[in-house]
Amino acid sequence: MKKYVMFINFLLFLIVITACNSNSDDNQDNHNSDQNNNTALKVVIDPGHGGKDVGAKGASGQYEKDFTLSVSKKVEKLLEQESEIQVFMTRKDDSFISQESRYRPKYANNLNADLFISIHGNTFSNPNVSGTETFYYHNHSRIFAQIMQKNVVQATGFSNRGIKKENLFVVKDTKMPAALIEVGYLTNPQDESKMWTDDFHDRVAASIVEGIKEYQVKV
Ligand SMILES: [Zn+2]
Image (tube, rainbow, N blue to C red):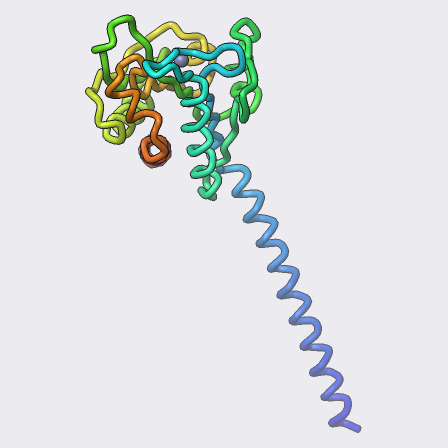
């Protein structure tokens, strides 16, 4: 009889221990997932133009809006693999977004995003002009623009036109560090032919992700 009582006590002890352990696991899991949501860097990717706003018409006749969407989608895919980053897109398809609505900066501000990156292809009347450049507006965006420019120009291999402060509403109206990357000149036939390859889009997308990570470590 004594042995039987001891056995029952032992069983009860095991049940209590197991219940305690599973409770503490649950708490830890909840805690971790809360923490991830709170600390993840919110990044907004803004594919320039869209719909009837085709952007620049490249030397070959292709549109900037398709270039920006292709690169942006690749950035989105890469960022989705990063546990510390939450990615948001101002457009995921060929939607038209009116400039007057100021939707792009509003979208990022409403999300309380940490970073905003607008992706574009450049245009100029002289087809010889080429290179990569990044625009910013507020002083708090300067370092971010510098880091993005450094990484993207390495990926494009085009001449480095540097960063420029410019009164563009997407980088001016956004409250968080914001950069508008002009990846290359679609009006330059040599550059444009490279800019439409899948490999080029992959490299540029990877360099944007590297830039975000570099900024994340520095700030
Ligand atoms: Zn553009």
